[in-house]
Image 1 (spheres, helix red, strand yellow):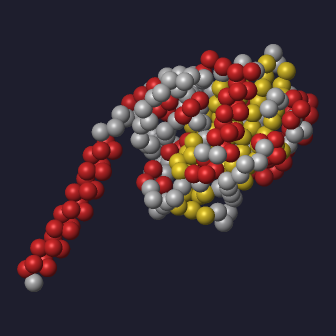
Image 2 (cartoon, one colour; image 1 turned 180 degrees about the vertical axis):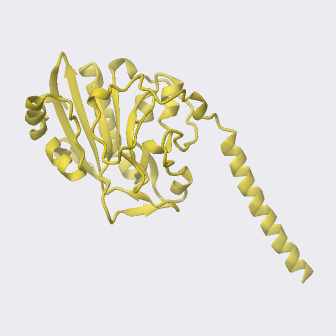
Image 3 (tube, helix red, strand yellow; image 1 turned 180 degrees about the horizontal axis):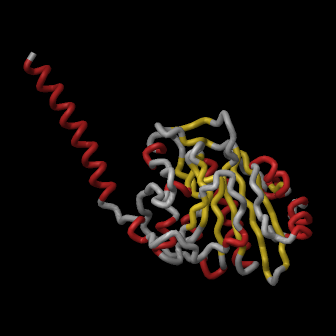
Length: 268
């Protein structure tokens, strides 16, 4: 009886010990919050921001987002990617942290632990290597969504690389990206983080005021298909998401560009 009690106590002590070690290791990582001065936009041009269906728009220094508490992720993340932003510097990946500017609190990173899904970035860390502050800010949990590894490292990665090539070619583009959020989606973790069935990107080129748009709607699965197969009219994406992506554009330009697929205007 004593031996059984000893084993029980030992298991409890070990469990508590592992938990404390994990908490210690996490707390010892460089804090992202200390580098977040205040709710400002040094990099994001708010003129191009989409509408928010949640009225919870957050402005970080290097991207903006609209957080949807129901699905525990952003409905969109928007940022400008300039040619000068693209860097090959290798930076140490920090731990993900809860976003201090999301009033309803963004989902904790532990929801993703042992879920079988990657923490897929909306604003890619690879687009923000030009400074440690910009890079670290992409590791807020408001900037991620559950993605299958084969999707995240496959077609989604190919699309992110294509956007970087366009940023170099066109000397800067404006990017809006997110998952399609609707009812009956699978969820992960105790906070029930939704797993989108589709992810999207909308890219705007505004060189010398000559606007052009292109939008992608990609099924959340592994695929080797050509990226051009996922191009859709922005209008179609707006109907699917309920988001008006570029409400401040002149109506004539917005209507013309959003109704078109736009493939002919972009170099693949």
